[in-house]
Amino acid sequence: MTELKLAVDIGGLTLKNPIMPASGAFGPEMDKIIDFNQLGALVPKSITIEARPGNATPRVCETTAGMINSIGIQSKGIEYYMEHYVPYYAQFDTPLIASLSAGSVDEFAELADILAADSRIDALELNISCPNLKGNGLAFGMDADLTYKLVQKVRAVTDKPIISKLTPNVTSIQEIAKAAEAGGSNSLNVANTLLAMAIDVETRKPKIGNVMGGLSGPAVKPIIVRLIYQVAQAVNIPIIGCGGVATAEDAIEMMLAGASAVQVGTASFIQPTAMIDILRDVKAYMERHHIPDIQELIGQVHIQKEIKEVELNEMGLSY
Image (cartoon, rainbow, N blue to C red; front, side, top):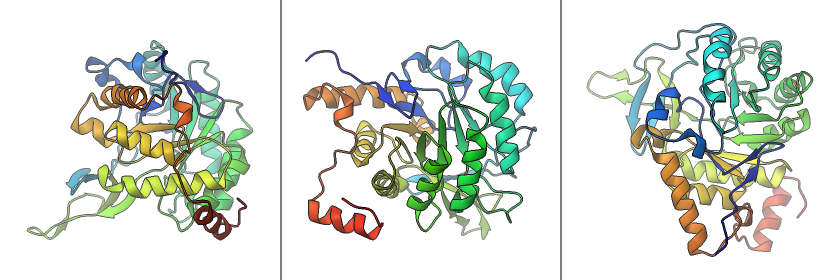
């Protein structure tokens, strides 16, 4: 077979391959274990304008086939990020995607303006799953109108690719996805963690200091695959799958459902070389199935036409 083509486009940004870290599960210390130049993109932890201490401990607990975390967007602030993190990540031959978190629409735009002005940052990932401090604490991404306004406001300050990171904790993720697309998002991250809770039956206390947190890991993957498939039918922009990717088969499953790329999070806590292992095994899969170009996998799940017509009609879309 000729050389495998692994490049993917995520809305104006071309990646050498579709494997990248999930924000919050990746940091500089990992360069002692894996070669960052082999990854499709680098996505550090979400940054905020002001320094933040994060949530009360304990912040992480293990669950069956997963993990609950409630870190609370711990951050050293934008000045430290620009002075230390951006120069560090810029040394690698891999696009840098900055993840943003903010408490208001205006703050998102302010932060995006600062980050977008730096040529070393290739794209912005908007963590619209974080709480809106002016909206009773509900996540921006739980409201279609607010999602549209937020993305539109950020779009006005930059022409760099915008990735909207959606929350799965909604009734209809398709409506939020369409709102983000209409606002000017170039691609979508599907999705952030699922709100969850665990209790220690011996102490009868929550296992997480913040009581509830986000569930990630293999347990959530079937839900994320379903969300990717649904969103792919509703929008015309690329999707990045995120949630439960631990193997090449997981990554390929999300791509078949409609994702152009995937992010790896919890798996890296279990096996720090997970992203490199997944990339290696994706290549092996392509060779085994005689697939020269990874584009041939995106959205290629086989669905009976009659079933698909029913699904799309229920979403108000045409086949």
